[in-house]
Image: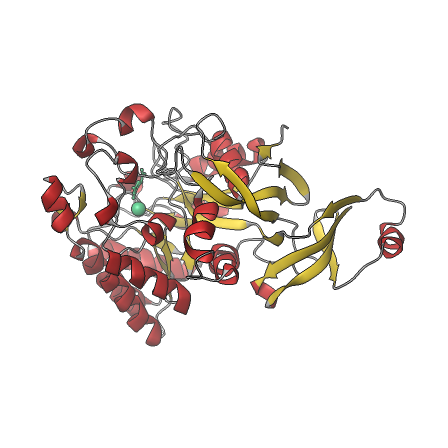
Length: 438
Ligand code: DOR
Ligand code: ZN
């Protein structure tokens, strides 16, 4: 049994943000109390040994749930695999991650869904739930066998990495989503508008002499998919929203009652294109970083609930790939181990976003929308949880990262505020920033 003494609990699922004593037993949250003596704990323990943690000055919250993680297995294990990615997850405070389907081969059938799920279970760190593709071969044409893949453990469907260009295919996918009850996750990017663009089109891309991706490449498809979700009633989730126009469109659709949720990535909340230089391939990401105005719209959208969730879009690549000239380097930022700390330091500490809203958006909201365990510390809930030390600071050092990837803009930088203990189903899997062995 665990006794977390005097810890500040943030649990938006029960509108709680206050000091508590928390008891964990048998992989579940047993109870929490405003005050508690050692005698009382021993009475409850009934002879079982009690591990006591002094939580003073630290936060305890339900483990983060990341609905957008690229784990690269099968096929690109030089970038990441399910074991390294799920270890990186618990180091960063994530107890459940949804694995994106754009692997090699892509996850477009039940056998591959079961493979990813089993590899996640074998790794035994975060819960790893597979996302299947929407279309066979991720080719944008024929739909996959969604019901069969759901039976094998698929948590959602997405052709992420690529947009579904054919509107009729997207409409049909949303019709099927009504039958499976699982969300379709849309990577909104009009192929023709995006062209060969390398970063957001604007003053900065012109100055750097790089081909630009206009903001409309995203918002045109956001508008299309919102209309299709409205017409069909299918469950739609919009990945990595990055523009002011998209936020406005989502706000309007929600006001009409459309069945949609949307996510924003930490890098779009923290960086903008003005901060980029020609050698900053670590910041090359798709959708690209937008303007200062976009960033403000995203923060406002997350604050007012237009954007429901934060998700990392952890996209590991090798340093060899990211060391190429900007136009040849792949898109993506590896972020599982730095994302929470970066949000804490860049948005929570300066007062732009409450920590309660961050936990709601990164744990409670994904659990609800995707029907996942976790997202709550109510008595009886699964003990997936994080102890966070706001004073712990760390230089992001390539020898410490447990992900295979090093493509983070924080490499060599100091971040403050980190998860210092992480439990999955009541088992301690990370302590003092070290992922425990199995
Ligand atoms: O930057 C990105 N990287 N955006 C995507 O949509 C895909 C991802 C990847 O798979 O590397
Ligand atoms: Zn994407």
